[in-house]
Image: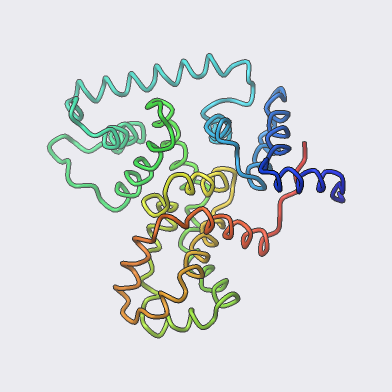
Length: 294
């Protein structure tokens, strides 16, 4: 369907005077009035536009299946989620896996393990392995985005489960995909990373297993997670690509792999919004823009 010139003019005007996203917000409000909610349209919207902060958590909960498409049932289902959360919490307290001093992210981990039937015996609890560290990193980031602990746990659990189910087979191939797009955008940097031995040691776990939790501040991270939750793990490749492109000059000046990794694991935090915006543009450039239907 051809773009509406009048709509494009209005959008450009709104953006110029500082009201970027006005029409998008209205479009989302229309989608949220559907009975039942159309998950495909909500996903397409989230792929194409950043979610307004006032609706973000609600849309995430719907897309992750925490709330059903039927809005009339949201209060009832929300009550069930709360009861289940409290039952699991009390069970772990009775079994002495957690107490009042247990960090909340470790509480979420034990809850997740119990529900996944992989809870270790109390006598066998050991420091978190890499998979658990991924979970804890995502938990810490989600805590910064979501205030309510019940919502926070359900979002962590369903985000992690959905990511593994939908993208588990794709994640091992993302580094190769990054290499391909870097060869298109900046072959000199790619050659430098290869020749210095840094390419094989880039922080792929931080980027592709933790979805940039612990790398990007939450204000930027949530815009990336909008895309992941609505169905794209490829966005992670373009965020990594844009980080490499944005710090190309610095990276070209580092010749030791450990220096590259140290820098990329601790990138400056003040420029990340621009990095995510450019990454989304690159993603749309190479993968196309989903059609938006309201």
